[in-house]
Length: 183
Length: 173
Image (cartoon, rainbow over all chains, first blue to last red; front, side, top):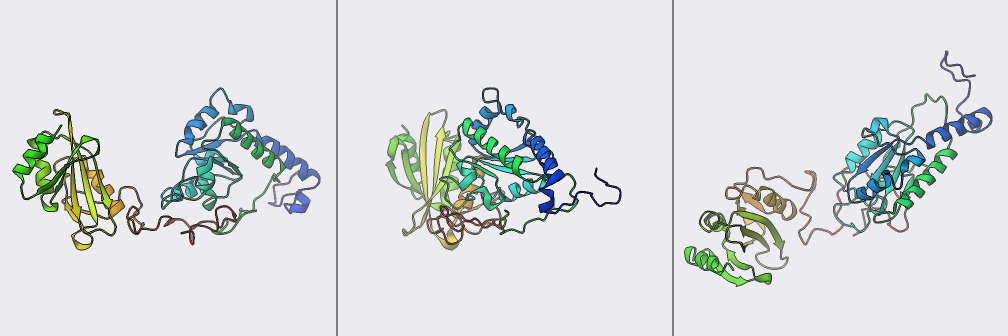
C-alpha cells in the first residue's frame, strides 16, 4: 500500500488529499489509537497536585480513558499536564520540557493558575501558560474537581479524534517563532 | 515575659539599644543601632540564651526617613521567651547592615531574602545572592516603589488574544 523504498510516500501529505479517501480512514484509526493511549507528563508545581493525585488514583480512575500512566520523562510523553502556578523563573523550564516532547503532543492547563495566572497577578507569575506554550484544553477551578478534569480529558480525546493524523510524514514540523499563534 | 532581658540589654548596651516597648501579642521590642546589631545579637545568643532566630525580615516605610527597617524575631527555647529587635536602615550607600550569620548560621537565607526583596546589603555574609528571583531580575520586588505587575519574563512570550486578560504583561500596570 505504501512504498517507502524511494523515500516518496504513495499517499501524499497534501491536506486536502490526506483528508479524503484512504488517508481519512488511516487518520481516523490513528486518532482512535492515540486518544486512548495518552502518556502524560505531569508538570506539577503547586497545590493542584493534590487534586491530580485524587484524579489518578482508584476512585476517579483515569485509566478508563487510557491516560493513567505518567511518564516522568518528556521524551516518552505526549500529553503535558501543567498542574499549578508557573512563575517567570520556571517559564524557561516549562518551555524546555515542551520542546523535548516528541510529536504529536498536546497540552492541558490544569487549574486556574495554569490557565490564566489565577489571583496571582503580581511581579512573579506568568499570566497563563499559553504565553509560553500552546494549550489545547483549559480546565478552570481552584482546584478543579476531578470530574472537571475528566471532562477536559474527554474534550481532548474528541479533539485528537477529529484532527488529521498522517501515517508517514517526513517533513520536519515547523517550530513556531515566539509571538505567533498556532492554529 | 522577657522584660528582664530588655532591661539587661538597655543596661549592657546603653548607647545601642533604645526605645523599648511592648509590641502586639506581648513580645518585647527594642530598636538597635545599625552598627551594633551583631554585637547585641551575639550577647543575646551567648549570655541570654536566645538560641534561635526564627524569622528575620525587612520593612519598607516609603516616604519615611530612614526608609527601611530590618526586624529580628528571636526565640529562646530555655527561657521560653521571644524578643524582637528593629534596626533602622537608610536608603542609598548606607543600606548595609552587619550580618548575623556568624551568630546564627540559619540567618543566611533570611539575609539573602532581605537582599533579594528589599536590596539591603549585609556585610560579612558568606554568600549574598538573590534567594527567590532569578539573577537576570532587575530591582527589588517588595520595595514599595517597584511596580506591582512589573514582570520581567525570561523567555519571549507568545501573543495571546484574550479579552479578559488584556494584551499581555506590558502595558498592564
